Amino acid sequence: MLRVGLTGPAGSGKSTVARLLAERGFPVLDADRIAHELYVPGSPLVKELEEAFGDEVLDERGGIDRARLGELVFTDPEARAALDRIVHPPLLKEIERRLGVLEAQGNPVAVLEAALLLQWGPPQYIGFVVGVSAPRARRRERLLAQGLSPGLVAARLDVQVDDTDLALGSDVLLLNRGTLKELEQQVEALAHELTRRSPGR
Image (cartoon, rainbow, N blue to C red; front, side, top):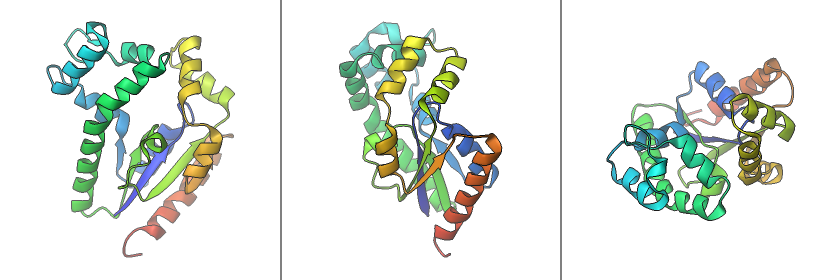
């Protein structure tokens, strides 16, 4: 199975590309959603995060308040590093497990959407990396539209992969600088390329 990593900074359009690929029949895993599912109240991971950051990161159910946690780590490099040390090992293990399930089901291609893919290495089990790039001003507008404060938006933009590293780390780079239709055309070409590279083709 061809294991595809889909990455890019916040607001670049990764989720739109993931949706377009899913509409074309490719199974897509969302690393952020998987991490959210690991934040089960009472789990060892939640307890470890509470010990590291205090009970202010807990929500009313005893799970993790991801918005509050984000506010803490995106403005503090040491806190962000601590979060990575705690969350990444179980997250990467679960991602690999789910990719294995998709392969066992006979899928020729699977896509992992992960903003931090290149910061992870990328993982050895990813065989092809697709980057999504967009101008910083457009990414800022999208994040502000999600209700984030200007300060938090700036902090998020500053800590994510820059255009040079994204281009160097990607096998294919999609440029999300125009209309949705233009992005769809790039995704259509990408879909053909992924199919061509899949096992047995």
